[in-house]
Length: 435
Image (cartoon, rainbow, N blue to C red):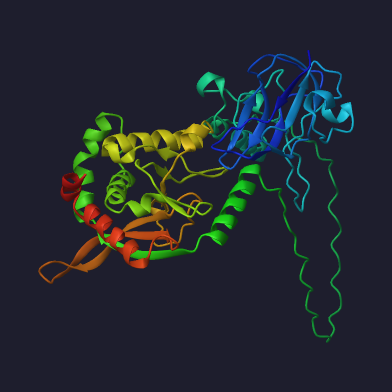
């Protein structure tokens, strides 16, 4: 019986996705729940699993194509026509030979040719690794089949690839002995002025954007173009916060928790959202409505070798600082190991982007499309401040950049919310009383 596997919705209301890589080819026999393709949506790349068992008789699109939800992807146990079952006219691969291999990652164009190692595997002997892991291995020239896997269910992680030491021992190539060249006699001196040497032509290196970078570029351009954003820059003296964290670091470590300033900021911003609900809202421009959210789901921007991801601390307003710190660490590890799931990146109502760890100060982060604000968190810098007694002393100032959607949040509201956030961060005891 002919079965047609159609493009599933793998995200929150996903309309389309890019087929970044086929994991099967025509002629392969696939079991139910076998991975058959990698799909990029607006969140991340993930594998999709086959709902059918059978022999692949047709792939409807090539790798790299954008496919709408509901469009046909794979024909199982058919005659290769696919038309009667799907009722949709689609592009087909031109020949079976083109379908017999999976397209490798694009090789970067360099001024000096350099061999690349393909790490793509089909279902038969398929290496369990996220696309970000495969991309890193490709850049390092590492064969994934040689990397010991330490991830869940036998997945190769980013850490596995970074720790892997490829065998670089090779027999040296013998070099034929060459007689030394006879010295060149010096040219007779002349009185002509020395001519300037023409500069060498510039060399360019080009590399195809990764699927994740394409999505990031598209999202950033769209959000920057459609959201009228304003940023308020400020700082808060946090000597009491620094002392509080120092006091409880050891207790946190006993529970296996790395207590960071970010955990405090998440808790304080969640409390601020309860006092100023507009910053935790969304705009529905189709219906011209403001959508107020009951929960505070905090997106945390995490940098990984393959790009920027935003996992979510759900219900941050209901969790302790210890709980938040532990969850942030777990999510960040999942991102860097390439094991983050779409579910862990859904449902954010506001976001924090932290450049403090890179010693950044003020910056203008871009708002997520379904949110109305984002907090840019800078580093804590020792600076002179005036204390309550009017004395100039050394203080510890945390840099804050609050970017908000001016369609909903006016400057006075934005600064009022920022002032309240500063109060909470300046005195952890006050924060505990409020939240």
